[in-house]
Length: 517
Image 1 (spheres, rainbow, N blue to C red):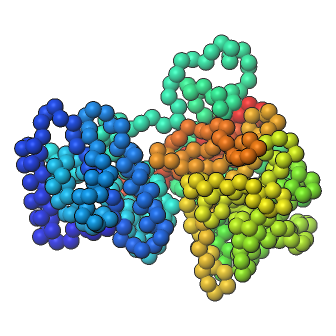
Image 2: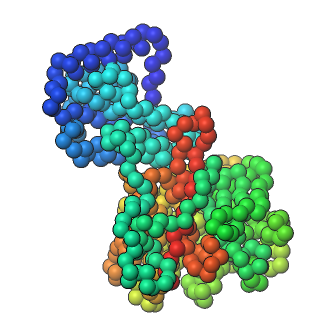
Image 3: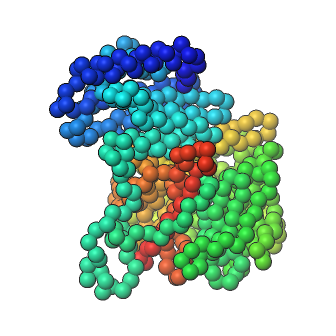
């Protein structure tokens, strides 16, 4: 973005602000609605991803300004474009204010997107004519482009608060008490029918950006442990007495962690922990065992992303261990390596062909629709949701590009760096206990993010239910016995950017919705 660098430039901005105030007093009337001019964000980069993201920014900001009521009047997008005089966006703050001056706007919204090596910056401003100053200003630099979505939501929330006087409520609003009919059921409410005055269990804020979670019995005591993953390592907790009790933590420097999964790989009733992480030598996966609050690494595999998946060809209730080689000539060919855990050794056991374009971390399979209809689902590198049969023939594709989240990974394969997109988890499960599965996927919107459940109607995927939208990014979710109460819960991580970078970084909150099964 263009930063005002000298006193001369600051003086020019001050002069423009003075004329703004003068014209405001000359042209406005007390009864007229306040005129808002929304200008496109200027992008100081030729990177395709940032240019594409700027389109999303412009749509989101303008949509946030719509339906403001009789107190405000939004300048049409076409008129705003004409004011730019064949430019795509104002390149400086001075230029943005000059355009607003010509348009006699009361409020002007503008911003900038820039990239400096691996750093991405978003600055959004709302300038008030009557006071001659910026009344909203969000300026944040993040390490990954996918984190800009959170900065954008913060800016939009600030605009919303300034114009409406208070931020919009998130998650559940209070409604009348639960009806007597529901009380007589003596059972937990479903996710879909959850009374709004009963909200989900919510953790206290965690002062880091959690990337993933899983739940399972790591020590064989018939009680589940919970793994929370961040880039620098992982922590183990257990849900007790209505709260999370920390047990231990684990990290190996200089690893940057990508995923963590809890799964019983050898059938002994005690789950192993499957880790994937990036080292200076490339991607590596490890299988670890947990005993007496300590981890022991059983084996490591170089240039492999390990994950367990359903055996949809043989025993569909069984999970098998597969690996995706990151040093392959075509990493996304769909060819995976089968592995078998024998004691403390992981051995290759052949190959399996999954749909082309598969990233194993964004894949699942199972029944959808009528009994006996098996599908394989992926989020590809374009964040498109695609459905295949067991012969890897494409059945359906949803071109909505807001599935999952935009998390970029730079993977070292041999002597070259490869950049891939990790859209996050999808999985197939029966959330309502009715014998019919849904495909669950994370989605983003202009107001936040949510989890959507899709069903197969015989011709296409259709929405069956979704959680309430909440500001922030859902980084991961699972359906597990989170509370060790014999009931399944939809557990999700919501990551929110911190408004004041000088105080701390992003924050994470864990939500658990109890499901009726």
